[in-house]
Length: 404
Image (cartoon, rainbow, N blue to C red; front, side):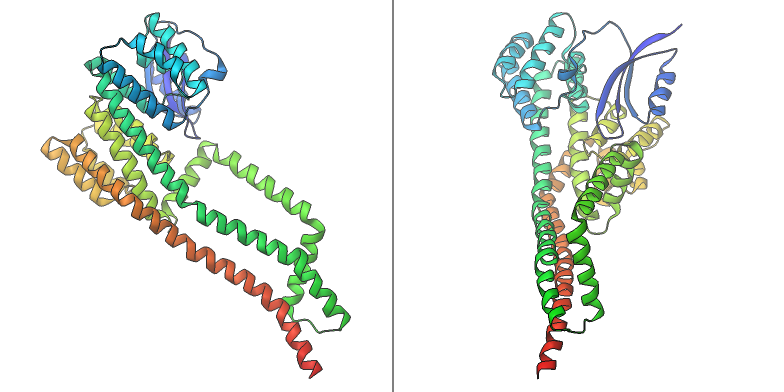
């Protein structure tokens, strides 16, 4: 006889997806999810029907800043002795995010009908991350929902800082790249044709590199629309491939192995993973249930896949520090700290100290990332522009020699 299950899974493009599935057993559900190219996070038998919500709400993402404010405000209200229903009622009217206000109203309605907060949140997987749902469920079971909300507020604040630092670190290289492309385009389309007329009117013999530059200039001037079309198609194709499970894994692996950014990416992943795992464990979430959720915060499918393998090996009696060390995805210092935490029985505290360490290292990692990319960009720009200048100046020197 078929049974009804609810599930949460990580898609190939890193989005947590929730849904219902009919199967004869939990293992059959897991196999179906994997056959879709997803990574299963949680599967449980469906106890009661859920209230249907609009697609526009259930698929809408909310900024980390809005989630941080929501968690902090909910913590304050629960600490003050307000009921969960009353707190959500107020927050659904006062939140700065219009979409979050609408979703909180739906969550509050579900709670009034008998659902728990975590169950109500799970109906909006694109709004409430898996981490938040898991921690909320643990807080409900332990009676420490207010403390969990406080931890979540800190977690999202730190996570937002990490992502902002990553974004800010890439601004300068991106601007430098755009300026380089623009400068080369101006030279090829407007400057080179001017010199071509001068060279032709004076019958100046042209070196090979000058002929190459002139040919490229004519091609760009005549077929700029084709070049733009090809670039646009390439961008669309790469984005489409990136959204597939295999594409996401390919690019995530390249990010972790590319020599210029490898060390910085490893440190960033270590900071996100250890802090999230510490938050989950300190809230009472079992280690087995925490690893995939912690891995998902890195937005790296290679790490998520590894966490799934490590979870399976932990069930067989392995140790987390040893399995993480064998994965070679994290710094050796991190795995050593985790080993100490396992031996002393204070794993969550050791993870938090490790996260604090890598948070401090993060600024240095970002500076090193920019410092490693900047000279490469400048060298490439210098070589390209130097090549164009040489191609133009060599015939001019030839003209001068002829005149003399």
